[in-house]
Length: 73
Image 1 (cartoon, rainbow, N blue to C red):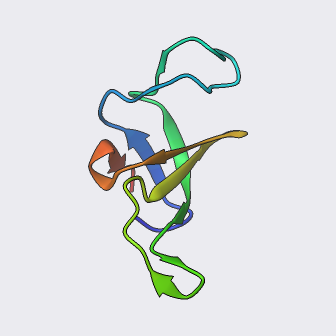
Image 2: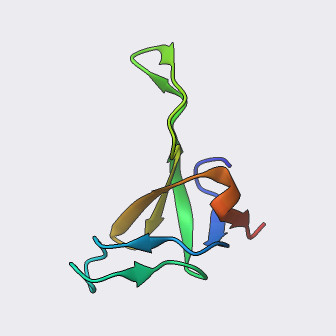
């Protein structure tokens, strides 16, 4: 995954923070967005975060694992 790449959520990922469904469960499966960044270092030191890929869906952003996303080319 690289910043700027278009991706689709390929697995069921339920969030409670979506702006249009705040406080209620919302499944992101099938949603398409753009990779904003991939977290692999912090203050110049390598890190291994659990959810390293940040994807933007309009104004909403969420963190994902690599296996939860599929590239759209």
